[in-house]
Length: 115
Length: 114
Image (cartoon, rainbow over all chains, first blue to last red; front, side):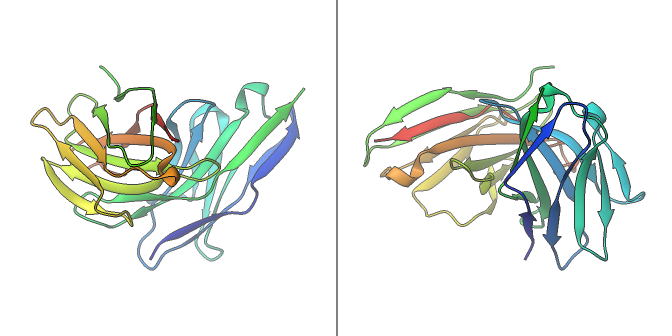
């Protein structure tokens, strides 16, 4: 069975500093991995995804993530954060249930960007 | 192109009551998945509907049920509400064959059970 662990529940950082949000996964099959962002009182927005190919994945808003199969990790990074990046970030792995599949999410990491 | 919409935005119910939440999928999407997001937690998969049939279910009791209509919109019904059912309920739609590639989430319905 697939599972996701987000290692930090909260990450405070100053504006323009780099940030890394950590995610480890467990899966016995081929892995599809995702990062979503949730702004206050809103639904989830896809930041980026890894399905196959290059292990370095670039997403929206300047975020990128690296798939590391040996360490079963998919950490999210941004070289310089903005106040507007303050949100909750969720790592997710695909689950092969039914013919369409669904997502298994971690518990989330709250990113707080301070001026 | 209209995105995924959900109604109502907020809802307050009493323990033991029944509730129906609605989701309109994005144009061209025939698959709808429902998730429950309790406070401080990540979303948990409830079930998925594909071509009007339930197509996968998470670890939720039978009092959670759903429907999908010919236009691919969907309903989530919860009977005999419990306090722990208080959560944000999210629906996500996806196009044929792209469940992981293009799963679009709605803004959610926040249900409070008192």
